[in-house]
Image 1 (tube, rainbow, N blue to C red):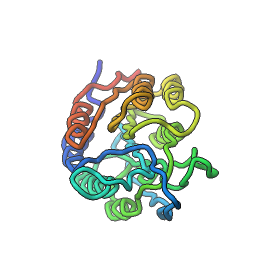
Image 2: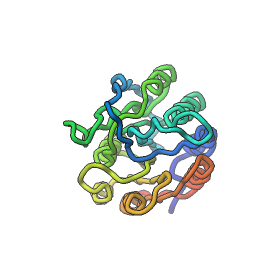
Image 3: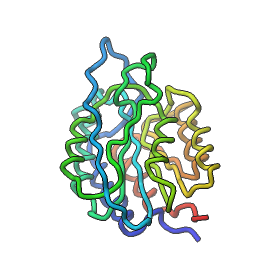
Image 4: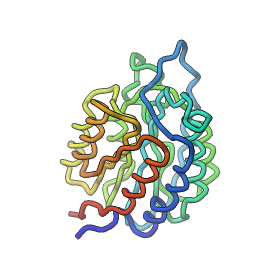
Length: 250
């Protein structure tokens, strides 16, 4: 028997909070933009710990921090400014009992030719509660920088969620990974482990190979793929995601 992906806490978080969070001008992520010189990377991510909500489900948001986030967003400001505004709203509106985490990728290593670019993913929020000021500080450090190492981000996000209870990853990206292996294969490997994990994907202004790759990640990860071209579309798709049933527990 299927059920909504999370309990009432999760429904409140995604069904209502993310609507407010994502109602900002054009939060549209894109592939890394070239630059004449690398910017200074942000400080090391702030680690935050949250209390367990009773095993009803954990959610890990996996967000793109690639260099093109410095580009202008529709409605004024940069993409990163829009993302920071959204994340601050999310932190301020989180139910106390919500268990949700945040992981970013592409935030520390500038170029794919630099050592460590394909391992460049950080857990900046560990699922739990009681750390709103620390979360806001972490969001302040979040800025566009590097490449798109989706495979390792998926593997690390699965580890972030532990091995008990229903778990969901929501990958938000414009797609094509700059690192091997194919993230579709990684999603299949995670699914083959027999754990209660679902990978849903929001593809932002993607087409062609990038869209195909993200669609495959969702398919192989027992999840759903959603297209979004602007802020309104993101809101619509995440509302659908919040209300659809999850894969039944084994």
